[in-house]
Amino acid sequence: MTTIDTAAITVVLPEAFDERWSRLPGIEIDGRRITIDPAEYFFRFESSTWLVADWELVKSQLLYVEETTESAVEQLALEFIKAHAESTSDASMVLATAYEVYAYLFRDEHLPTLGLPQITADHLRMLREAATLMALNKVEFDGRISNVGPCWFFPAATSVVFDLDDETGGMLDEVYHGGWFNEHRRIESIKAHAALGGRLVHGCQSVPDQSGGVVAPYGASMTAFRDDLTAFKSGWIEQVYAHRVSPAA
Image (cartoon, rainbow, N blue to C red; front, side, top):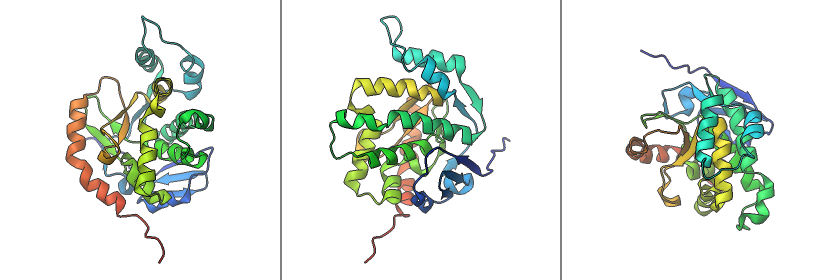
């Protein structure tokens, strides 16, 4: 029988996270220091290893490589992962790598061309924080979802932490999984997510479905992924919303 390491996960990131993340079970925020108790934080925690590649290497060897008629961007990312990604049981390394990935993908310079004037720099900070924590979620090659935390359910988690209404939470979710609604951003996303050992995939059709996303390894069974997600999601979404703070009367 495999014993999963449930020791506390601690990481110090370049950016201080919103202290309201502590509203969710098993997570404590102390400025730039984040501490997660896997036993309390995760709904399902069956794997304590992740695939990561050095972010500096991704920046220097992948981000600016152009696809050709012979090599699509997905193929470039897959080949990079095969050559450079390594398995780690250090969850703090996963979080630190994810922070760099999402600081790049959700950078403020995109705001003028996003075409969504209601999205602000503060919203991008929320996206960076939530997506960083989502990197601890995991899908296996056979499609089984092995790790599920509250940030799987993006609108629910952000509504709890940031006191967002449903419309704003849904809007952020669209920006998160929509690749900024254009091909250029999608290509950026594919390359950047190579640092987390895979590609960003989603179980949802649209915001109301709220089926979340995860960085999955290339080749993972999406049929099994969909079936597993369908079986568990509704009950866990309710548990996330249960931590919502009611406005003061």
